[in-house]
Length: 280
Image (cartoon, rainbow, N blue to C red; front, side, top):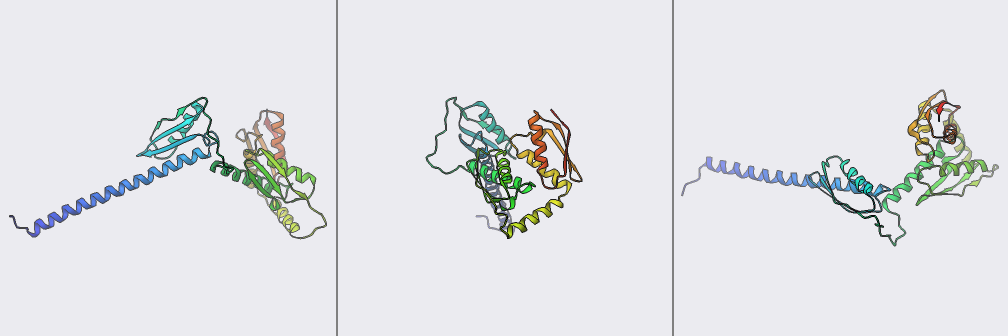
């Protein structure tokens, strides 16, 4: 039997330490990769849930070492390709095994529950935020006192308005928003004799309107176009100088041109709108 020396004991300890560290490192790397895979799976699945084209389909996602495997059923080839492109768009996903089956007569099973899906909840929350913003930005509505709720694309407006014209305008702003299917306008005409917090709110809004900067106006006009269901914001350029908004670019019709001008005029702080550069 060969006796141990300090040198051999030290060498053995180094070997054992190296093996232990390698094992720990390998386990850490495996765990780290599993976390990355799970994060990518969640990102892809969430995007499917938010997509109007894919949220109702029966799709499943698994990711392993940068390769996503897609399974499930859709009704059209374009939906299958969309699912693949979404997966490839996730950072770190390098390859997609698209096993999704296309069936022309495929119809997703309807849920017996009245609960909205995750995607529908997000859609409704987005619509509510957009309508609130449009009312707040407008010089014709008291957006600060209007309650806006949305369920399955149906917008309900509650609160008060100075007159029938302001009430109608608020309803039109809500109706002309992406994703809105109907508007229940419950705004009540305010009694002009009634004093109180309403007057203070209007005064604050008026002061904010007077102080609106050109950059703020430009941003809000662009955003209003983007949120509109009847104006193609991608083809319209917006600039503002001393409260005068200039629109240029192309529109599909005279009606779209008039609507774009009207939307710009409705923004707080806008003095006038120059639209000679907006052609059909």
